[in-house]
Length: 455
Image: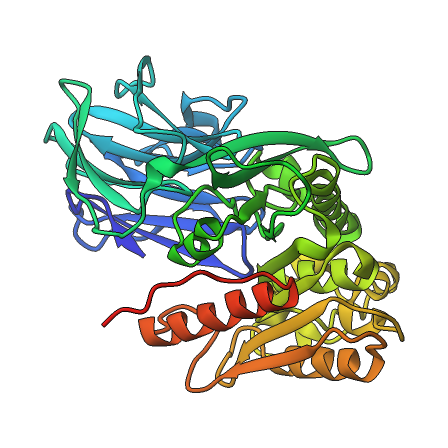
């Protein structure tokens, strides 16, 4: 629920799952006006941007896998009268803002941000120059003011606030954090590799400049692959420990995410979910094949749906990884829908109660695919108050792994107390968890961590 900037329209959205919403609005300038229905189903996404006079600007994926911007008249809200302001393009349209009499549109171009500026009728004016390849977190500004603010980050740049002058087309740093990390010593490269079905998948690889590709570098590979969520470049202080110790941090933009629109998302859902795991395993094989690392120096990490990713990959290809970090993961695919909000995830996963879904869920469910064998050194992480992905997933998976582990690699579970799924976790708990994970990774790779003791 929210209003337009001028508080003329009240807009209400309703959801029944993780995607797709109904949309209603009310003109607050008309006493006793009723709500008007724009859409009353949950088949597509409709997100209010703002209004231009009596037209509501809506960002939608209706008839546009990569999203488009439309204008809906408050007087004639029927679909027949909808106007297309920014049509669907090759890149996913992620966000739109009205600032200084312009439309500022954020696109995802090859898994990083690109900004385009249009007039109010949707005529393209110019591409906004960004500090580097990275991610714009969002714009804040007014329709009648020429100055706006946006956040920008990359794998090597901490989140920084910039001031953007719409009229002069220029940006300057407004507020930057103080971090003891020299970004100029590191580089991020984007590569494209082939998955098992020949699909091209992008991956970001960050490391020190001058890194030797001799196959011995400790490497952490991260992924998510679900729910139309795009994993874009961002700075994480935890990763700097790996980078400063000569390691590599890689992020694979696998199917199931939103980096390339609805088709990319759907290609990693339901009966196609195995594509997600194949893409991630192909990323690992690429890192090994290109001599960035080897299987004894490779760790994988993912959280929530990414915990499922790690759980599936380590049970399908335990030989490929030395260390695995399934975090707050969905690991019991036959019963996930029985707890808290789990049933809302059925749009991506399917339900075991449906005969057509059971076979593919059973085929990759991490809990049900643990057999006696040699598994990577594993640290499962969960929290005792996680009401999104209940800790029972992690408890059962950890028990199965411990009972079936035939090698010397440890299988541990780390249970955070008085914490939940992750949002709002205090800094002290984040530091403690990060220290445990990085230490576990380097110890099991027989790598030494260089560190400085602070007074």
